[in-house]
Length: 236
Image (tube, rainbow, N blue to C red):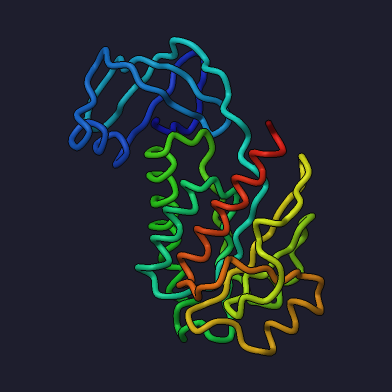
């Protein structure tokens, strides 16, 4: 699956680094067929031009849309970028709709400013992960926000993942079709007591992922995988 900026009059194209990558690395050639997406619909298309400066597709047919991405937002406290970027990739594979980096009390100093400089790289990680897992829509990535701002997020279910294993198991969450979920994920070292209490005071529900203490990135992926399965049950 390749993502293109738009499909217009039965044609689509990629230019610049994206085109060079397709030609040099993926060895895309004329007359090959691929699935492409304009971030709204997916198509079967044939390559009619394959140059390092531009790759042009001609649309053969519009393919049936995939199941819509569930309305799940991951509010992920910032932690070491190698682990955080792994989370971005795996969260994409687990069908997250939106990712919002959060500056928590125990977020390492300077990560919030460095995150701004990484935005373009992180957008690329989300795009490449979406292509690899053949998603139809690339997840949204917001700018970093403070913990207090994240607490004001709106969703049908607002869940704070607690390393103290407080609250009922996440798998027991009751979801109905069309409902939205916000997951608040703590940093390395866990939530400060003040943050844990503030989440509860603002209507967030503490839920557990089981008896073990998970790394932050593991907890994020486990939670998203669980929510994906719960959403699937509401569809079938």
